[in-house]
Length: 111
Image 1 (cartoon, rainbow, N blue to C red):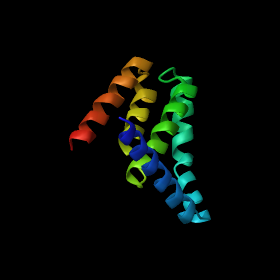
Image 2: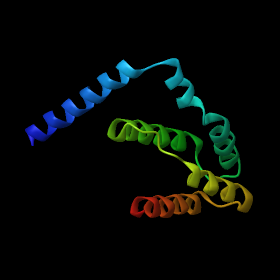
Image 3: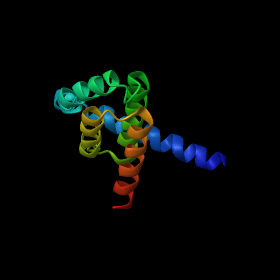
Image 4: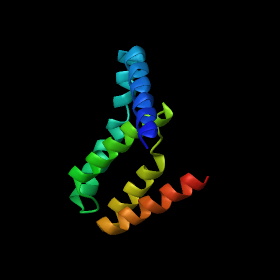
């Protein structure tokens, strides 16, 4: 078990060093490029009660960081934008929105 912990720690350290070496203003602008679409959708979904804003921001940020360390690629969130549009238009509850997200996430994982 200790060897796995050391391997995981070495992996994270290596990925972190690579990110620091590659960091630039272009990376920063790419990282923030989706906020123009994401924030209005999140705020509208919070307003209709489809999500809890703080929880959504926390989990989204956490999984973006985990995904960045694991795959070194940005993860597209286009299916989630479709769920957001449906949640806003149809007034889905938080549970229905979460179920839709889990279903789409599972489908994308299988594909």
